[in-house]
Image (cartoon, rainbow, N blue to C red; front, side):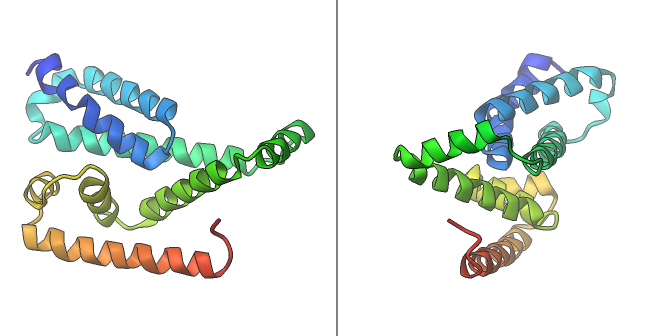
Length: 172
């Protein structure tokens, strides 16, 4: 197996996957670098990995979710007066709608990540990555019918949770 051909060729897809979880380009790039490092560290085991794309996707998902959890913990810490002043200035200077879109994107990423596996992967692969039902079925070892049914359930759960939060006033 060749690192360039068999590992690096998945870089763009891994970046999009990490970005869909983190909603931050720099953080997503860091995750992809970590995935590449993990792949290199496990080069002695490559022959034992049946589906390299699926293995890389799983590593990417775990690392991105860990990074997002860590960032969420940091966001829960009390804000300093300087941070609050910067936030007030941003909202007063007309960038409130950008902040709202960013918050909505983070909310959707959180809702997707809260879905049980493999529903979270299905939404990311189909609705964010744009993968075909067939490719998703191969990657997740499901039938195409299962992919369609599970994806329908996942979208329903997302819709239900989003509307519940929106009605409660927790969504911008």
